Amino acid sequence: MGALLALASAVAYGVADYVGGVLSRRAHFGNVAFVGQVGGLVLALAVAPFVPAHVSPQGLAWGALSGVGTGFGMLFLYRGISRGAMSVVVPVSAVGGVAIPVVVGVALLGDRPSALAWAGIAVAVPALWLVAHTSGPAKPDGVTDALLASVGIAVQYLALAQSDAGLWAVVAGRVAAALVVLPAVRGPVTAVVPAAACGATAAVALTCYLLATWQQLVTVAVVLSSLYPVIPVLLGITLLRERLARAQIAGLVAGAAATGLLVVG
Image 1: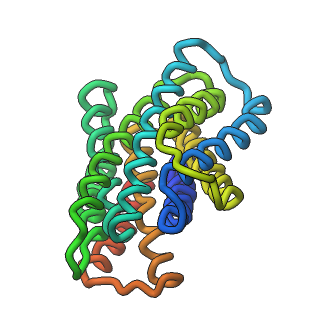
Image 2 (image 1 turned 60 degrees about the vertical axis):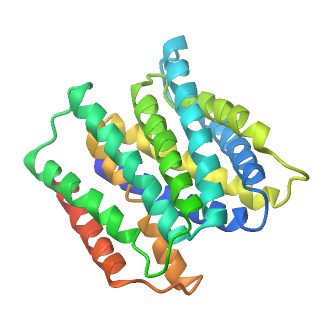
């Protein structure tokens, strides 16, 4: 069940990143990020009271730190997509987002993945790099933003997994994320409804990830959740008529293989 929840998180994240990326090409990325966090906060507030949790100051603090990572990550992710190719920026943002938590999970949190899970991790990271391959030149700003976003995404995953506040950690995180991105808001806020829906979808992704960490090693949950770049790539093919390079196709196949290994492991 933990693996399925992590995969559900990946799907929701992928959809949210695609929609948020498209909106960031039409409106200021800071506006999209802020409205998204508010939308996520509304959803989290509506659901949190119905999920039992032991709410503690420490748990809320971990949730808030996770939100700081979210706000930082989303700002740079959306700015990167507004400047570069989505099929490059999103996968690159996931590589650091998965590599850092895996290292921390094994070195500091005592995670001990099985042999099959290690094999899945070993396949997943290069799979993300392959999905990030593009036949044309990537814009430097987009890649730099993606790498910066990956640090925020890593903090988001690691901090949320340490919280014992249940969905109230997600609530605290949305508040912190909104405060982080607020200074980046520019001019009139447009596309409120789709941006809010995008943020709500991201909150669902975080909730699924949090529930997955209760049943699965953080290392494995992070890797499975970090397969979200597959969704923007597939949506880019079907909706934006983007063309895939052979390396990207290989990356998608490798990502499917990594998923199978992690689920079984």
